[in-house]
View 1 (cartoon, one colour):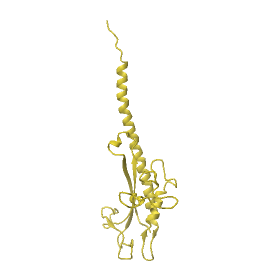
View 2 (cartoon, rainbow, N blue to C red):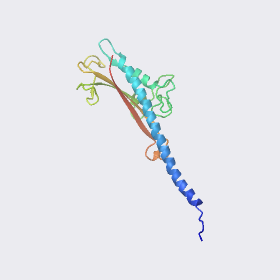
View 3 (cartoon, rainbow, N blue to C red):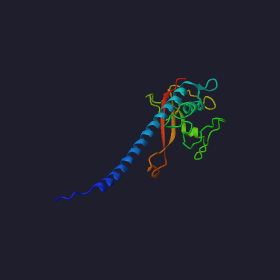
View 4 (cartoon, rainbow, N blue to C red):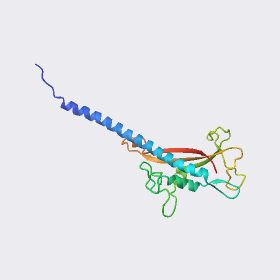
Length: 198
């Protein structure tokens, strides 16, 4: 005659092991999704700054320069004056809870690691000359500024098309509970390159 065994205890143990693994995989998937959306937000901001900067150049008569402060402001305000699009706060790119530029006084927060303004470190702006005329200025890595024209330079590399590159960085704080074993945060970035039209 067969005796029926109770498997209630075994089922609880199996469920707890499986649920723990499923929970960690779910939270890791959420983190990856949030990183993806953060990068998309940075891409939109970089595109906004580069598109604006490629058209509106400044400088004294006879010299053309990028208006870097206005480009950075366009990047920061791409999502409106609240700075957030739900996934990244463009007004606090280093995610420390302090606005990178004080909205009242306009004072810039200083990065303790570099001594530069946070907004300058987290929004980089370059003007590249396409020396080999292949439509991709990045491998050439030659600045488009001609410093012999005037003090501060001029975007007048004659014979070469000039491109504007805007790179936006942001610190992403992990949601995944085991991530602090590796790092508390992860720096994500998105570059955008556009031909200067001005």
